[in-house]
Image (cartoon, rainbow over all chains, first blue to last red; front, top):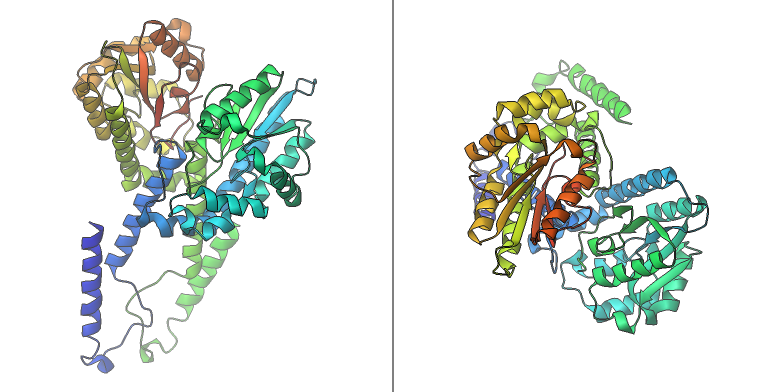
Length: 262
Length: 262
């Protein structure tokens, strides 16, 4: 249907311009150039389709998926670079903080908030800008090189939440799919981005390598519970950060239409 | 900010028309009337804000909420009555069916798919059209009167999924927040809408009245598991249909920006 619409659009376009030489100086011409209706219709179709795709990914209905569909590449880029992504990040941070303030703490220092790292605390947007905002299939070797630079920047609304959560007296635990071999560069990157302290930083050890993120993160959360922590909040951009066992009392899904981790 | 934008919009509007009498016949005038930029900007602001609000509700970040915020009333109406809602329903039905076909059945007739009823199989849109599409605070007495009419219509993409699931040899179980007193009108409504058979229809009994939906539905799913069912899929428009204990292997969140059930 998209192609037929494009065809109609280009036909209309050529008809419009073929009339250009015909007595054009005699007619009052519009001062405003308007796109033909068909072009707007085509744009609306793409918008509808890609918004629906985004909701399917964000609600975990689409599972698994490997890369952004090509027809939504521009849509995802616009969302990430425009105000959509930052508006959503702000909102989830505000909602999380609102909830955090309502939690009655146990007073024994065992209430904890679990944060994922990539696309939750730290943004890898400079990397994804170079890789089609998720249009390209994920390349772990290339991504490792980026991680090793330690240049990921803070997601500001998450930094605000992190500070509020610490201020309330909660413990913070960072639980990431990054490998143990990236511990020091990750610590350095976190500190440079403003995340100055944490109770635990858990990375994938050699035993965790083959595990799905949901399994690995569930196991680590279960360990926390065994150690006496009460997980009152959990923030992540992937459902595999949030679902599974030893789930948090409340989970907060940050937006991420660029990639999916099972 | 919205009011200041509106003010600018109306100022520009009056300026535009106050110039209308000034030598207007001497100038070539545009054939196309364009809205002032400010009006489009204002519309974009509302669109951005309400899309972000919808994302927050659909991902369960906003929890609980009582009614649609007034500035998003038109947005929600447009979404429900336009193509957005039906596009999202189609997509979740397709994704669910795609997954259902991939499930390896046990062969003992114990694989089951759990469906919620309201806004999952049956649509109460005619009721919500009369009540501001979720703008009004939910009125259980008024809603009961609507339920008792038995006129809710089938959500077509869900009917398609239901038939596919049955065709695959899965058992279907309907688990609803409706009261046991509405059993016969619900059965009748389901049959009239095309949902002709089911393995179980579970409604809230007198013991369940005060329970949150998450607790009530978790208990009922646990009972199913105890009876030997394997819950391979679960469809619902509320996160309280899907989260809790005895969770399904895969859950599918249908869109619903009109109301929230804890």
